[in-house]
Length: 296
Ligand SMILES: Nc1nc(=O)c2c([nH]1)NC[C@@H]1CN(c3ccc(C(=O)N[C@@H](CCC(=O)O)C(=O)O)cc3)C=[N+]21
Image 1 (cartoon, rainbow, N blue to C red):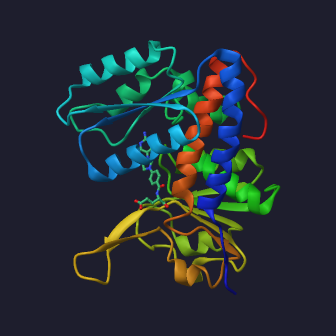
Image 2 (image 1 turned 180 degrees about the horizontal axis):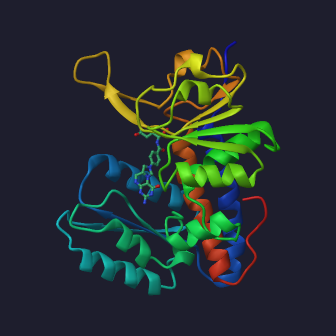
């Protein structure tokens, strides 16, 4: 069998178009456009690339982008002061502080300082709690994007066996909550899981978010499984001195067994950015006391 390739880039482009189409109604009602503030501390080149593509996508969707670039030696107090200023800025609906932060800054303290109603990353404990108990809030962008791709492909997920590999607060745990909310039978596997291949072989849905290049092999999969690869790993390419991106799944062998699989790049990554804009638009409608449009 040769799996169908799940085109996250195309789905993300469609979502961004639907978001752009909803912005004028917000602008008519409020006299302003939704705004996203992105804060980058230091000059990690990969982080700078993501921040730039977020800013570009924000403007393309008709929203306002506010970029704050701070030097690598910024103190925690100075970053907290900026977050406080953004919390109080009425033109800012969403705040994203790019992670990881330099080691003099306590990430949890910074996330805790963000107004939960502007926390479009969904990283604040208030939003983690809302997701856990099924209240409206903000869901982390990557897992929500994965759920959208799965529901687009499979429709109702009720009763399906889902295995999430990875237990991070930003992907694995919220992904498991979302799949549980969609009535899957959910297993969270991790580095201490015994006989991981046997656990993965039960799954109708596999979400790989471990950060280990090409770890999940085709012979771990149940034939016909749908595979979502969250990993983005830069590895040496065949040509001397060059690099390439690979996922946490060995695409070639997995595509022989799965019914559908997301590629890397072009799968989950573009969805993360599109969902960030979706969360920002939803935050803007909610903060204005307006009902957010359906189906976003
Ligand atoms: N507070 C916070 N929120 C984040 O959402 C966040 C963060 N910090 N820190 C860094 C990670 C990383 N991240 C990506 C987003 C899009 C792509 C993406 O679009 N990737 C392209 C490839 C891009 C390339 O070629 O490097 C793809 O997969 O097709 C990748 C990675 C968001 N992150």
